[in-house]
Amino acid sequence: MRESTIAAISTAQGAGGIGIIRISGDDAISIADKVFVSFSGNKLSTLEGYRAAYGNIVFEGETLDECVALVFRAPKSFTGENVVELCCHGGNLVTKLVLRAVLKSGAEAAQAGEFTRRAFLNGKMDLSEAESIMNLISAESKSALKAATEVRQGSVSKKIYALCEKLENTAAHLSAWADFPEEDIPEISEENLRNTLNESLCELDLLIKNYDAGKAITQGVPTAILGKPNVGKSTLMNLLSGFDKSIVTDIPGTTRDVVEETVVLGDVILRLSDTAGIRETDNVVEKIGVDRAKEKISQSQLLLVVFDSSIPLDDEDRLIIDEIGTTPAVAVINKSDLISKIDIGFIKSKFENIVYISAKEGTGKDELIKAVSKATGTNEFSASAVLLAGERQRSAAESARENLASAIEAMNMGFSLDAVTIDLENALTKLYELVGKNVSEEIVDKVFHNFCVGK
Image (tube, rainbow, N blue to C red; front, side, top):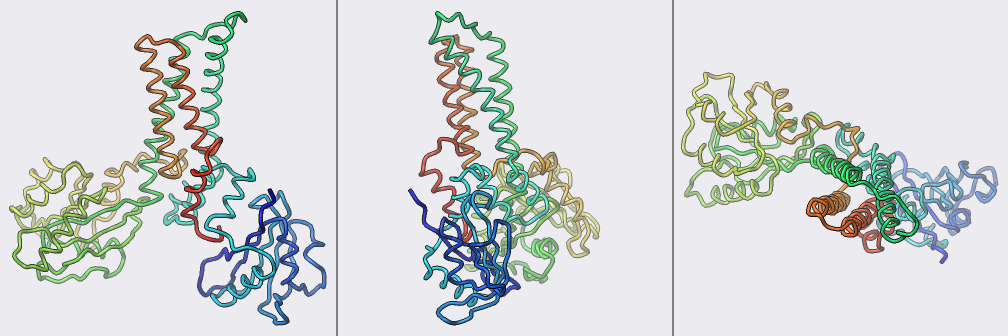
């Protein structure tokens, strides 16, 4: 079936130095020739791939903009199809007018993620590499960018294909031995089979472990700043965000609502929420803020619990500690520039990670970076490690791991090798799904649903 030729604006909306309209499909070059007039007089159809021409975008007798047209011929393009990229001046109006001219000349509007989807379907990348593109675009730190680049360059694919090859060979040997006994195929030793399954299980365990730590680097950690009123939560928020995001006064209870900001702390992206001081109160408005602060605790994966070192702990501090539960937390002992009156022994009995800072003086940030890294598990994480690109991949890896664990359990219980083979084949199915081999159309749709149009 012949695919339609699609087009979309591939650069971010808004004013800018350049705006790119991407066209992909069999008719991409001929459609571009209908709107692009080169100053040399040559048609784009006469150009080889990886060539550019300079000219004007002209439609219905009107010159819309100057333009550089880039030609990529199938299969040596991002999508594997003929591609033309029209590079015009940036700006909402000019790019929309050029796109409109392209669509009226025969192209269809691209759907979200359709260019990358075609790249996947045409074998230019597998599904894990395709998913990494959104992480590449949304990277907010150098570590996040490096991790996404590693996946885009095939680190996950190479790991999974190597694992699949090992399990395929084992499954094929088991099946051949069971199905063709007359062929005198040597039986696989129980020791070798167990070693293969255990080694594969350990490899998947490491992938899953790296995903949990890597997620903090690539996607960020929902983090709440907690504490009773006037301990310095808002000052800490402003210190980490680099500007006055939260109102700071000497009046307790100033913060009534949740104030949110994204910050990069070391290698970790924190989705910070500065909450109202948690305490018992009869003030209706403040009580709403306290209730929202407690709700944030349940939604957060990391808590920065702030204490005032210059005053003794009281029942309000203990109330907050009781609210934490099992969520990873860092005790932030603020106002360390003042004489300490806090019961640090009690704090140490409740928190594994403790730092001393003066949010007002701006000291202790390096120690906080180390504590957050430890609490999120990123202190032992390398951005060059093989990293799964999203929840879909993690879920597939988890399922494959469960199948391998089931195969090992079947061996331990003395089941026949047929039962082991079934679990092994189920694990392979999930690993194939991870990289997009033999994957359903429904899964492909889900992968590209959240992509931006033009990518």
